[in-house]
Image (cartoon, rainbow, N blue to C red; front, side, top):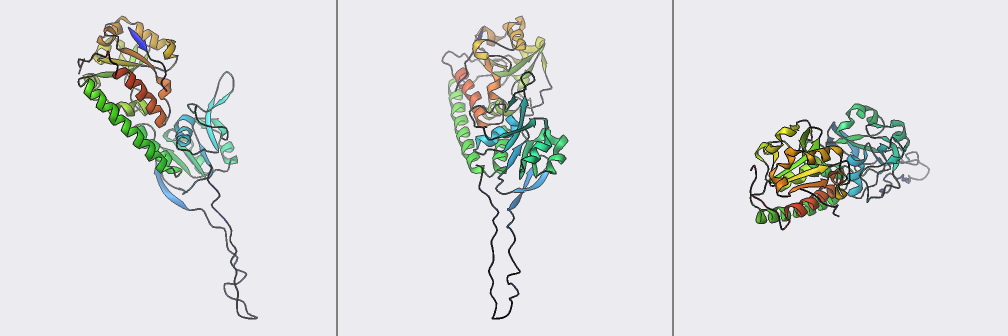
Length: 344
């Protein structure tokens, strides 16, 4: 009763320069603006930028940016064509390997590792002499330490549409035009997919869930999945219709015994721990799929209980939203899909 779909598809130049001002006076006399008035270096221009922790004065064209996390700060800068000089990431517990998560497809060869996200090495960051540090709202505990090194900006990633956060990340490094082009491309695709779903299945209901032991969570509370589901305005089961799916809280789980309330024409099951394409699911996903309660769902009986690889959607980037759109196009526009408005 389960179908698992396979995966679908610089730095800026120096700003400051010194200039010598020549002066000449009348013969045998010094001008008041004479040789003793050598010019001083021109300071880089700055601007005010409002972010999660207030308003900061930041460089208009930052040259040496360090990010405090990989998938939620480094990644969105790489996507708009800006390569930071350093970033925090992940240290693998077993191998000790230093990893920049979710940055596959982007060149991180010139990015210096500055510790683990959640506890970046402030001394390592300072050694890179950044002119700007960029992070997100979960950096509050050490924001003051970072601010002592360089202007620090924390972008709010969670609790709103991911695309809004991505525009802010691009803006902070002077890449707003690139971001707006990426957003326009995404918006056009959303409109196209929405139109085709409406034409093929006007009564379609969709439930997006993330299983855990003995319970299940809404699978679209934030970031890429939540933004796409919100922008597509998918029909939802009544029990989910009023949920705040962009809040990213992940606190209100549903007991598995009540899963029938979240039944729909299509139930998309997000798997984050295995290989969804090969059926090597996270144990919680496997337990969910094998539950008799789940097998009684209308979606399961119609072979419309579909597992997708949720890990492809993790990270702050338009490419992650497009990855989920790939999934939804394949699932919701399938020729054999049956839609009767289950729980709608």
